[in-house]
Amino acid sequence: MEKAILLYDDKCKLCNKLMQFTKNKLKHKTITFIPLSTDKSKELLEEFSIEHEDSIAYIQHGTCYLRSEAIIQIFSKLILPYRILQNLAILPAPLLDNCYNIIARIRSTFNLTKECCDTSK
Image (cartoon, rainbow, N blue to C red; front, side, top):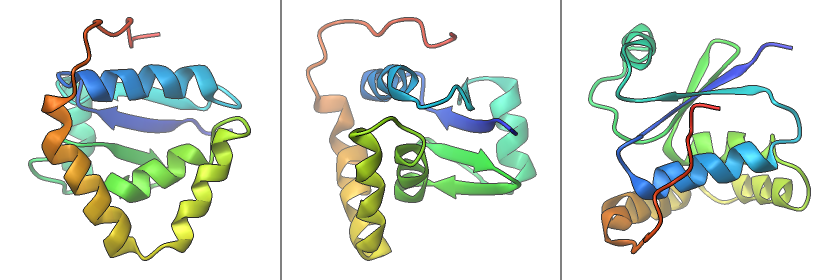
């Protein structure tokens, strides 16, 4: 089974917490996590012609999903009951993207007092 690739903003505490949660709740270890600050991440973004990406990107089977589409793809890989969240895909994409964009704008205001665990595992 081909591993998917998840690119995330490693400078964001909320993103780091989300990545740690995702790693702990994956049904199978089928995702490789790569911080956006790495050269490998920059190569992948260039390969998919994505400029100035500072959010989440999910790559699988030659397709790159961004923002809310990426989140839905991630939900589909989690254990139950979290996998049920993939059903949010029935909502209109513009609505999901608006929700994603609101969270992305305010993510720096979340008071996350603990530093996240090592995300390189």
